[in-house]
Image 1: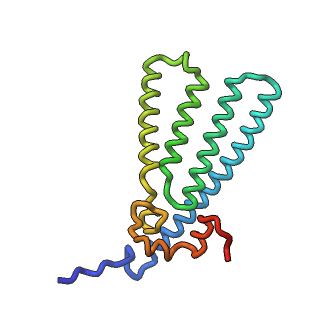
Image 2: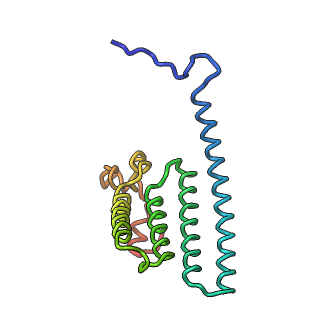
Image 3: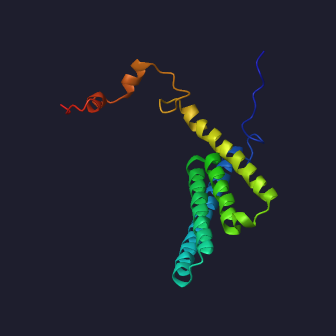
Length: 182
């Protein structure tokens, strides 16, 4: 028994085309991410300028350290947006790194001795969970790697030594043996 043909469009032969709407929405979303990247870059420049001013005027190390860590958080957020623009997916590992640096920044800003023991225990638990999640993200290959079926993805690649020899350059073994190329 043959299945019924499903229409590709919401209303067949009408003005409402799902694929063109999705394409236009993705382009608009990319434009929004680019605007976010530019504004984030501007905030980074302003923060670096304020760090320079803070260093030249007063030496409040806690304040300067908090500003430097804030710039590092902004850099990681910028990297997260760049990965999203390239792959159209959020890198969970980078997001976890940003969260870890943010939590550590708050500990540095408020001081470890000024935080109650309940908050310290909660922060330790959160950092333990985030560290575990970061380890899981590091051990799990990215979905693009798994769908590409290349030798660079260690889980999916099933080719034998013969196939690997076909993929390598013919002079790679000579370079490994420190022999000059002929």
